[in-house]
Image (cartoon, rainbow, N blue to C red; front, top):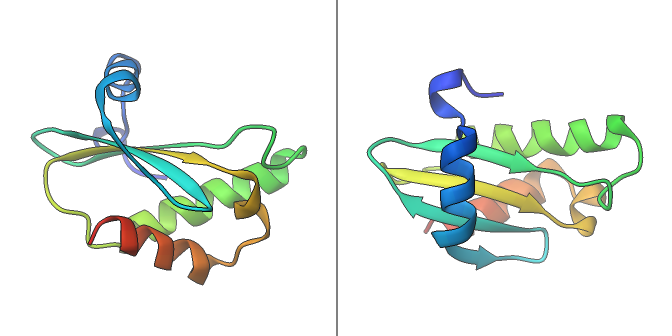
Length: 102
């Protein structure tokens, strides 16, 4: 999990989710909007996994991959996960995130 300064607030979340540009992969979709500093949010619905253990594991893997990825400065990123991400390895998630931000 990121510190509070790095997370997306509710007001920013609605703005980015409606106006940001979208990039999609088989594992997730990312909404990106320009900003002064980087902020992140990960959305994992019950469609990804019925148990909270699965959803939290996916969320932690995505946050770790975002932390390791070379994200350009000044982006607000909201990651919407899809069903196949539940069975994906950390390496698969990290590779997909790196491809999005190249």
